[in-house]
Amino acid sequence: MTTTTGSALLPVYAQFPLRAVSGHGSWIVDEHGERWLDAYGGHAVASTGHSHPRVVQAIAEQAGQLLFYSTVLPHPLRERMAERLVAHMPEGVAHAFFCNSGAEANENAMHLARKRTDRPRVVSVAGGWHGRSVACCAVTDGARYEIGAIRAGMPLSTKVPFNDVAALRPAMDETVAALIVEPVQGMSGARHCSREFLHAAREACAQVGAALIFDEIQCGVGRVGAFTAAELYGVVPDAITMAKGIASGFPMGALVVSDFLAEGVSTGDLGSTFGGGPLACAAGLATLDVIEQEHLVENAAAVGAYLRYHALAMGLDVQGHGLLLGLRLPKPAAEVQKQLFARRILTGTAGDPAILRLLPPLSFSQDEAQLLLAGLREALA
Image (cartoon, rainbow, N blue to C red; front, side):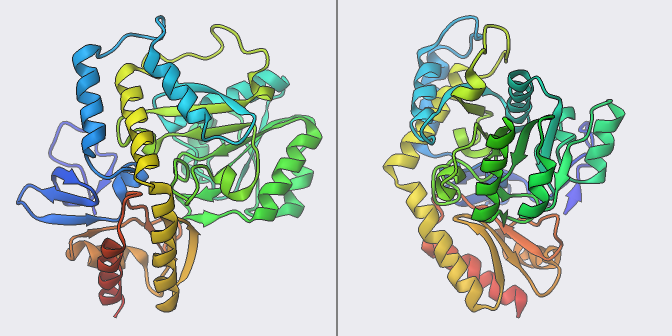
């Protein structure tokens, strides 16, 4: 991959040498008219596939009625989106706030936890990635992010080892406002937490009066074969954060909290000029319609199981759930990614150099999975 050069853009992104001009379903079309199979999904964003007609229509119709007005005015789509989203949450997680990104959602979740408990500390999990804003850098694993938080004077979180129940319990005390955890760690290579660890996290938070925050920015909205990872694991957190595929690529973030974190929240405690705007909510509602009516959660579970079965048959270890999978390869994943790219197949890598990450649209078909697996076999041969 290359970085952006020769333009007015800051060169901050590693990019594929591919210019996309259109997309449909699981396919991208480049400036030369070539089709590319997208098993990366715009980094888990293209939940309903690229430019799903129903989502496009919803955005266009709303744009013709009202592009924007700030949250100083109520809007029926915002209220409807909150009701629809809450209906997919675990029982008791019933209060929604909309923003524009995953980092914003995580920032607001930690803010509410600190406000509710009147405590300063946050505990996070090694390998977790929660965003690039200052407060999120403080809980994200990795020296470059921690240095950014330190420069800004933000105290770093206490990081407990991944899936280590014995280390988790002593880290939680009456100074902790929240524990934030990705049930499936995206950037670490779709590394999934154990059921034992997440249930222990719920118990530890309850014992000391801290909030349990599930960062489902990458693993939520149906990607793991259930609408929320909380549902998949049978754990009820105090907050669930979502973004990525919640509006099929239109910028949107969401924070949904329990009564514990909603208690005492009043006007002015949270805010976002653009959060829950008419276009975002139109896109979000259409996305939920497509996910429900086209049974995309079930498809994610089924096609994910198909990919897992055949990857295991190839002798690969597999991490993750549904259509958030990490394949442990016998050679560097970056090399295999390049070989798949040469076959016009887009995939992702991870912080672990041996992991090839798959995050295709939730509409990814078994036939498309077969094309991906065939390319993978060739790349590994």
